[in-house]
Image 1 (cartoon, one colour):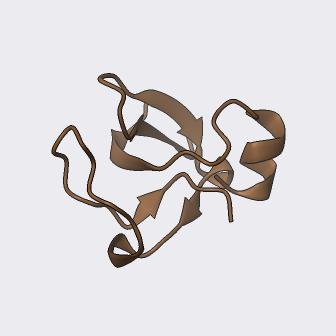
Image 2: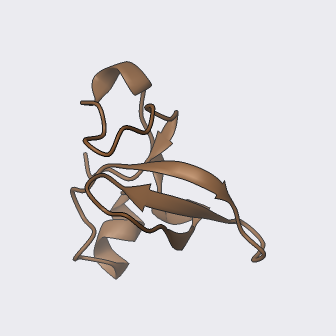
Length: 72
């Protein structure tokens, strides 16, 4: 998560996830956080891009993405 995302969604701060699709809302994407079965919609400003090589594989088997929620 970005600093803004961590501030506004403290329960998601520090979690990693994979962008799984777009959204019907402008500037939002659908994200599935690691360990979750379903995705949630977040504004893109709440997310921070990390390298797919900087993260552990998702235990649910989805491949790493170039945009994930993380708090650095």
